[in-house]
Image 1 (tube, rainbow, N blue to C red):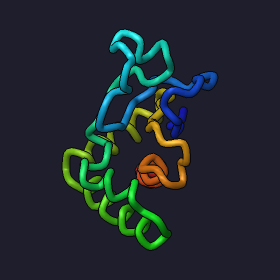
Image 2 (image 1 turned 120 degrees about the horizontal axis):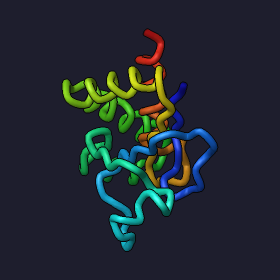
Image 3 (image 1 turned 30 degrees about the vertical axis):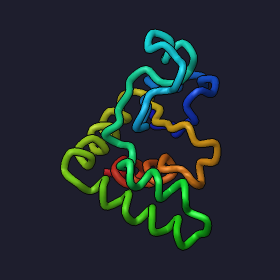
Image 4 (image 1 turned 120 degrees about the vertical axis):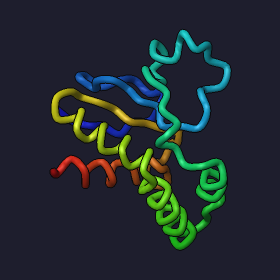
Length: 126
């Protein structure tokens, strides 16, 4: 089993499993009843999204130094007990079922989901 990192709103892969939206806000203009059928997410889980302040910082990052500062701060947010337990839970669940975690950003390398990929991979090893 596995955890995939996906862009919300893109077609689902075969055996992708439950799609979890780790974003601060639901998709605009999409009725709640259509979130899953339009390939956004099955479950909204903003607990694993960056704080509003960090989202603004990530969007404003113009170079690698600013991006690395965002990553460091986001990892600190994810180390807090509630977020850390959520990551532990997803990693444990991925041992028996497929899961997908996603965000809207086009470029994964400049998206918090790249950091989530790293944090989940670390936890999946135990």
